[in-house]
Amino acid sequence: MDEGIAQPGLSARERKPRAKRFNEGLKVAAPLLNSLAIATIGIAVINPLAQRRFDPLADGGWTLLLAALVLQLMGQLLIRFLRPED
Image 1: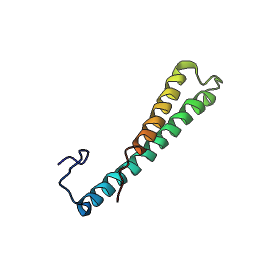
Image 2: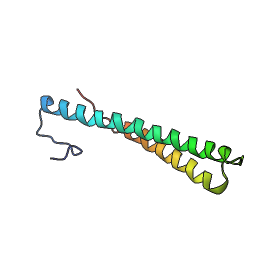
Image 3: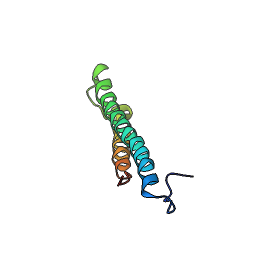
Image 4: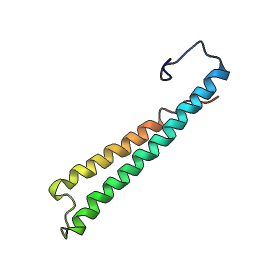
């Protein structure tokens, strides 16, 4: 059965480990997305400086910053899907 769908026939004893397992997966995925966002911001800022161009928004740098923002928002959105474990 899919864990994303509420299953009314499960007892509290069965729901708790499923919720815990689901939450642990989210707790791993959210920081991964946040780390990717930080790395993308680093690439967007450091790469132009290493090439002696001092405009991080030139040559598509704005797309990297936008991608970093999307990754950050996705990480924050995942946290909202945590299930109660009680």
